[in-house]
Amino acid sequence: MKTSSGSIPARVVVVGTLNVDFIWQVRDLPRPGHTVIATAAQREFGGKGANQAVAAARQGAHVALIGAVGDDPEGRAYREHLRREHIDDTGVTGVAGVPTGSAQVVVNAAAENLIVVHAGANGRLDAAAVTAALDRMQPAPGVVVTQLESPLAAAIAALRWAAQHGARSVLNASPVRDDFPWGGQPLDVVVVNEHECAACFGHAPDALTCLAAAERAALLRGKGVRHLIVTQGSEPTLLFSESEMLSVPTHAVQPRDTVGAGDTFAGVLATRLAEGAGWTEALRDANIAAALSTLAPGAQTAMPLRAAIAAVTRRPA
Image (cartoon, rainbow, N blue to C red; front, side):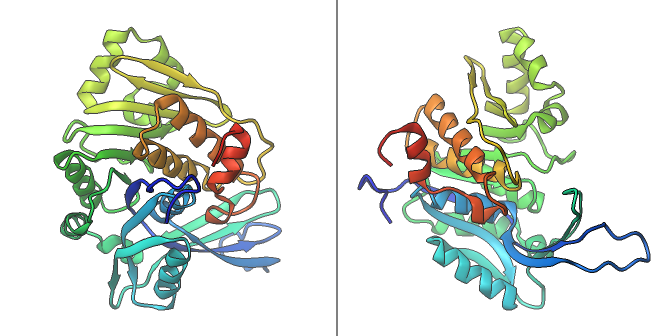
């Protein structure tokens, strides 16, 4: 599909997880050996890979998703959902005899939660499948996005393919993994929040800003990172590279539900980069999209369309 301006859409490929989330609302969280009665229940489509793909597709990008689902009713429902979102699911493998990934989320009246995740078919996504799916993409994508929720070999295969084929890579280094081989492959863009920044780079965002430029450049080179983006909730988003440091304000809102805000940010950022936007514009729009996604409950259901961001910036969608 084309963007509302009539231009040919940017091409983005997301490699990552697909989960079906079952959410149970309760008054009090269950204790060991206890049973509680849910006051409400709902099913949501989730998984960081699919979340980021939906965020990008709602900006008008041509999005393909590479991942795995089970050959079960949940997997078939997820494929139908992706097609409704105009996402190419030909790279999503159906795994026989393995359930689609799922999460059981129990939330109490104080918004505290318990979460149990089963990787299911997500755990069967391997490097060979990722590379083969990327090789089939015609025309080739401008940006390849991945996270660390998938098997590590699959994420690394996506990043290496991007480096070898001249595509930009966006790694959302979440959840943090101690075994990720920093410096093992060139990384164009890495996106982390303030806690992940400290875990992956050994410095909180404030400490990074205080480093001498040469010291900060050496840190990024050692990790193989060209551009490091740090989100900080309602505080400004930071960009670090060897040659610059940029701070972009967030969009002020009264959040209702922050689930999926980080995935919204990553998907919108990838789209803007694929379109050739500069850093200030790309980060501004990603910040706005993330903020708007917190105004309604749910992850994918709350992700904004391009027109909603344009309304904030007061420019054509």
